[in-house]
Image 1 (cartoon, one colour):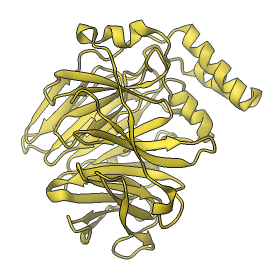
Image 2 (cartoon, one colour; image 1 turned 90 degrees about the vertical axis):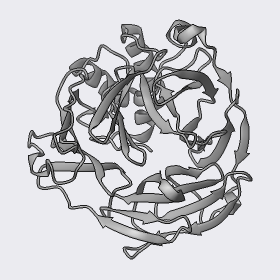
Image 3 (cartoon, one colour; image 1 turned 135 degrees about the vertical axis):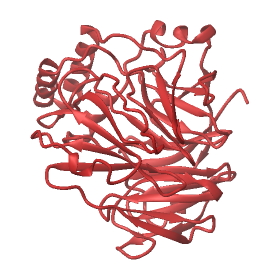
Length: 385
């Protein structure tokens, strides 16, 4: 499940600026608890293009309902994949605004009872499908007021919507939305590095306003190099979030919120060499105009700390996989498995062109980008089981 950004940049530039910096083993495997070396994952499934009703264009989410039930979202369409064979055995969803219809699927989330929640950010609603993939409930979300932006992130089993309320870049506050949905997360945008400032629960056991100060994602139309973005995930009755800069997550269940340290994540400062390599890469790929924009963004909003994570995947086996921001020494992507109490189990490396979006007890499911930028749904095995 991936979040949108404020401002827009060419997609290739976005990949470069939010990509990881690798090549230094001391920032990766050697920093892991007990010198835990990454295990390398092998491809086990590549879903055939012929299985889809229409060719995949933009995979906007993948949910592991259980180990053998995988759902892929692509714009207005949903595809059910047999997790054992990798075959598409059902397609559902179509363009429209009726029940089971979509304009733009933004994220998918597995729910208790093998059900599935699907958020459409054009229709501003969450559709809940039962285990038989039939529509059970549709929840329409009130639109934000003028100068405000509200981004639903996930949903709890009781129907509570967890959202990110973002202040407009012109300085208008999102206060009208505070408390409208419970629980509610609020992201305030300002200059400078990310800091951690989370408000706890009120006496009714509801999430009030959680402010994470110091995020800025774009300057004009260029993503700020090495900028972090908060990660928010839901399980049945708990919310997990991280500012992506501190090596920890906070898990809130009922009236209790607990910060869980995650040992072994490669945290380090950003060096001038990091900026230099990034600017050179962008200049080579996109030319001097884009290079100048990146240099301008870096000069106006210089960041000092590298994010430690890019994503958190909640697995069907009730563990979490944290996607490292920093790449492995061989350029691979690293994922670290933790228990919900923060005990590190293993680290797995996957190819750089593979983006993991969901995890089962035995496989990572995600997308592989070919040379033309067309996505392919793949699964990589989780070694060391």
